[in-house]
Length: 573
Image 1: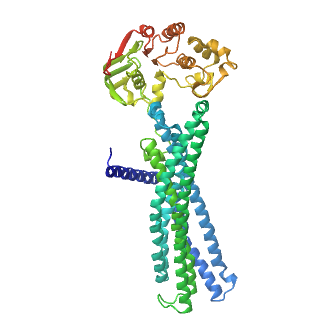
Image 2: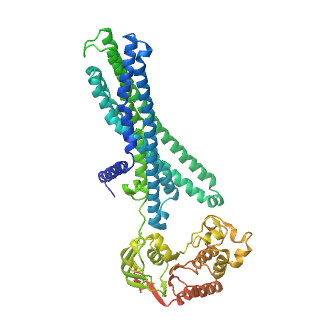
């Protein structure tokens, strides 16, 4: 059991790593234009405010005509339009950069999902993984598109405005300087609560997504057992919980915005009061500002608070992003590299040259199995043309060994295929060379032909019927209402267990893989069907490597050699 202090230290270290990852992605992303353009637009506010203040001062104090001050008004209008253009361009650049980050991050997560194998993904909720790749990645958009540019602007522009205003009137600059820090201080205080609420909301959303996806997948089973109404109420309760958590996040956001607006209005009112009393002669501190200086300060003050208010408005994007990153890291056992999230082209594993004449070579192999002793094999070899039977009692680890050789399980020791370490071979390349037919085959929602074409997308109808003939399903398919186009439901609904097993075996006869790993291929067959399948398999597998795990003595008798798994988990070759 982990001590509370130790657990807190681990959580703090994880949070620091997630914040560091966000900073690294932000630094490597193409956000330079999105950050620089608002700074330029903010700097142009200085001459714009000065031109407008000069025009109003000459109109009111010097009684000049509108034609005489027209150049100053025109300058202010041009600068206003230029600032609007810069801000619009910056938003487009920021949005494009955020979309690129999201696209590349999704690609990196999908690559990790595919590289981790079906056993890894089977241990996690498919709904939660889908939610992480879609919804949680979407939550990063506000952080990169809005929060980061607003943070940089808030760090530089207010100080620039204070410095320029101090050259005209140091009291007004001091009022601005004293009220500005209140906004980020309060924002940090509120931010702690907002981030915690966002994390709870992200966790609740992930749970709801996983719950909903699992219930939809098992809808027929729930209906048959009379649990549809109860599960519908459970989903409704989870949805209500998520709605409450979302409202808590919104309440924090609205409260923080109201308080920040109050402090900004308070600072602006203080500056207006100072200039008003100074112009009336009631205040002599800081000299006697002219109307032009007063107007310049009052035009500048709202814009000095604006970057901080923008950062505060988008501060919840930061909280959402950090909560999303934490959820992604939890579901995917860590985050992809920051470079993968900003690179335009994700790295593609190299296809190493394989010497298929060398087959599998195993040395000091150890395969961990949760809840029991590890499966071990001191040495073994599978050469091209070998047909090896794998025997052992139920639960001894036959499926574990097959899945390990297929690259689906972690292992210790040395396993080489085609002269290359198994762990260095790209999954796509390994799938072309090694075909695993598991004991519980997976059938996709779609037609019979669709399921067969998973292994050979370009196979024509004659090839599909030939493969079905090899496993004794040709007559059954011909009897179906739509033949090969007959749809199957989720997990092969519409076919019996034996038919589903043989349909998966039919894929074998459409494959060009030189290595076949078969897990209990005759488990659901009668004697006649079993003998016909083994004869067809022997003819098809001539020159190929076959490792067949089975309890059936007849199936084991077809093998050239036999491996046996002892009661202590040792594989004897």
